[in-house]
Length: 201
Image 1: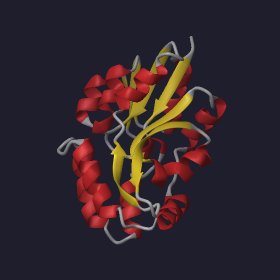
Image 2: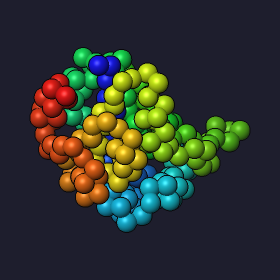
Image 3: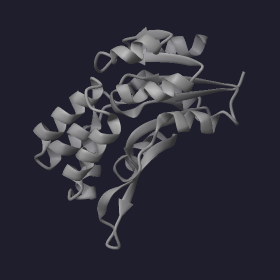
């Protein structure tokens, strides 16, 4: 059976949430951290929270953001090995902005679905032209794959889980969202256990 494996990025493939790392590089860690935690907990809708966080960070130098992510982000090593062994079947599905996470995605060598930045004539970030609904990514992949396995941990992964055939809540970085856990077929807390599960499904 032809299977697509769809991974959230922040807190799933990475050991950290990316926006707080970006915020630290420009001195806005407290503001972004509060919004991020509230979003993960499901207290603020992802779309509203994300627009607020982009508004706070829109004047940040993109080169600084890339440097902060490239030097400070840690990936889940076992999951990266799984991706390297299944490059044509693995996808990142992230609500994060394309211009911010592009170097990380290039490093992973993985196909992706992201939110899209709105840029002005001077190539400066001025907002968000499209916020990814993760269910759209899953529906897009339906024409190419017989089944889809989704892996995530936050409230914004709920639409992806609702469309997937198998759903795995992954708690290696922090406790998965309670609503997401109710939708899940499996809950795992270790990268090795996740990969063993993926290899048996």
